[in-house]
Length: 524
Ligand code: NAP
Image (cartoon, rainbow, N blue to C red; front, side):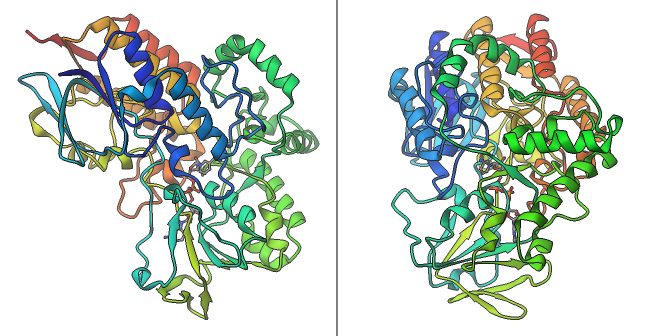
């Protein structure tokens, strides 16, 4: 029997393997893909790149990698993952092209049995999921889809072989982060791009460019100090966080701050003031700034109007970063279909039919997002004590203790699970924190331990996650953060909003208090 099975070999699973080996635990990683990299293995669509600066979106303990751009493109990030796998010799303990179909906990032996897609049953004392928050692709069930004559792709399941869109008429459905990156990248190469937009989103410029080697050297020289700073910050980013409320300064000061952050680019547009996600009035000032930018960039007023978010606060859906997204609509070979005005009625062999016309297309790209945070966990048949299914335990929405553990599921840890800061933060910072906490926990407890979240601890943590959301504008928002993008999914705001610094302190306190909130026993 193994000590630990880890599911997923993205950045979380790779680091988990490294730390568990260092703790002397026999570990096997199961990975559905053909190599390491997770998100960056699957998201190969044109224009895919990280929207966190690459210097920050990298392991804090790996040195000597030279990023070429401020925001690396997907191939470079995948190369980085491969480089780290080689450096640490990880592949020897990763079984690729192996999907975990089910995982059952056996109370008699205190162990997990994981059944793979090829029918193998593997046993381990502990199970760690590193399945990613955005990995279960959402493809809408559009009538007639099977009749479409051309190929269809989802951005998160992009083929590994070359997809040549040159001279093709491409229909893109979805204008979230993925669509906003893809659309400018294929415009000009495709014969025509028709974008099907349901809700216009806010986006601010990434301001990408070559990475200054001097800055990269400085970053590496100060890496430990910068890592400490990121780990105690609200979001795990090294952006400047403002200390004043937007409503406490003059309109001119607000405007100047927004302009400064717009020009600098990156994830910090909404961190300039303390109240942008708390007060509708403050939020509206930032939203209106971005709307005015869209109107100034897009030359056709009707198109600008359709692209401009109305009656929606900014930042409650993930704020996108783009490179020339809105300006793409000034091209003659890019057109916009507003699905609120003319919904897709059906897919026909030659394209997409709306009320007034058939929009002809050779290729359809779904940039329609994910069953986020819980989707990949629930895609497996996970069963805990007494055979209870995670799917049933979470029928009313996910519950967890610290986003790391679920009552009734002993010896299971969920990296960046629901109830942890995860997707609202720099994922690298959150991944490292979870991995280190889990590895230290297993090292402290030893391989014969059984550890399980107590129901009371789980309820009060879940309540705390909800209360924090209720305190902010997120409470009323409709986004994948709360499952609103998936028809029938229970609406629960899933990420913990207290910030990575506070969250880390809480996890450390729990561990220092002899794993308070967990029931610990030992196998005989
Ligand atoms: P997303 O943000 O969920 O956007 C999906 C888009 O598809 C939305 O515009 C949505 O419209 C639309 N859509 C969904 N179902 C539809 C349907 N049935 N008909 C028409 N339109 C539909 O997904 P995403 O763009 O893949 O991004 C997901 C997350 O992944 C991001 O928020 C980000 O965290 C991460 N990501 C990051 C990067 C990066 O680092 N640069 C890149 C890509 C993704 P509605 O808004 O109306 O639902």
